Length: 167
Image 1 (tube, rainbow, N blue to C red):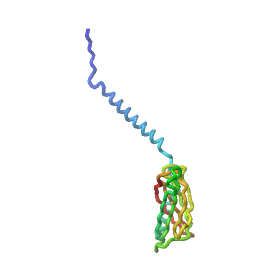
Image 2 (image 1 turned 180 degrees about the vertical axis):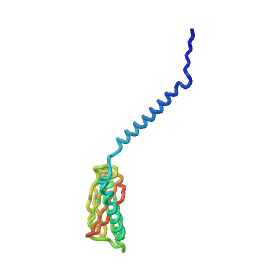
Image 3 (image 1 turned 90 degrees about the horizontal axis):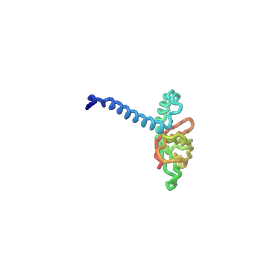
Image 4 (image 1 turned 45 degrees about the vertical axis):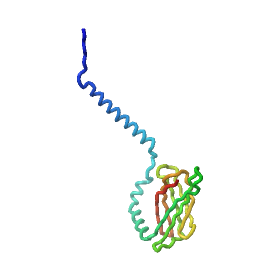
């Protein structure tokens, strides 16, 4: 006796659904794993307080604009031959509305690694020539850095920030 059992048409359709769900699950697992491994956890410190003080920031920006100062910041590798250290000479120049150097400032720079915590530093800049302030920044790795400079002259305060690339 020859019994032939044939499968019904479309018997494999449920396997398509299972396969699609397995692919989606695999992609989600890869993405979640990547997100957990690469997120540094960096976030804005005291974001709420900074948000509340935003009107104060805007007022300070208007006062700064009235000064009419021109600021130029340069970051140059201190010793390009040393592959272990990436120290850089930070030079910030200030000119007033008339194009004259701004002398006698108290200048401090905060240098922040935007993608990794634990590498941030503050340096005090000293006046090398009239209106030109310099410091050696002991950076421990190359790449992108955010430099925020605050200059004070009596009650006057001038803030400046710039992203720089250190080779």
